[in-house]
Image (tube, rainbow, N blue to C red):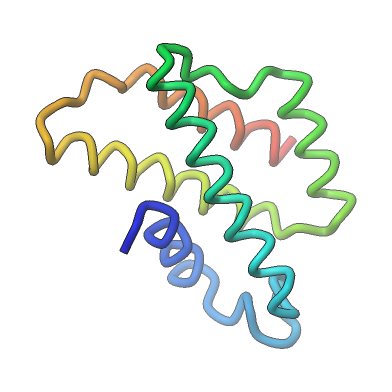
Length: 118
């Protein structure tokens, strides 16, 4: 399972039924859009980190993203859980290779989480 898949599983574990009728990621097209966003977030953070600038989410962009998600009625608690899952899976992936010097880049996902929920 890849990093985005691990984040998706955390969402499923914490929010069983989220993709079923009545759930926040139903119908399936909503769930697929959410999983695509997870992959996009992962790519942006990875590219920024490789380029030496993991601060890919400025305040204005994060605020706009949060407003857009609220307008689209994205289940923000699930999105926040997914972003945390991306962070955790990414850090674990790096740690298992003995190369982790990226702890400060956790600020990126923390900033995204704050903007999504404010």
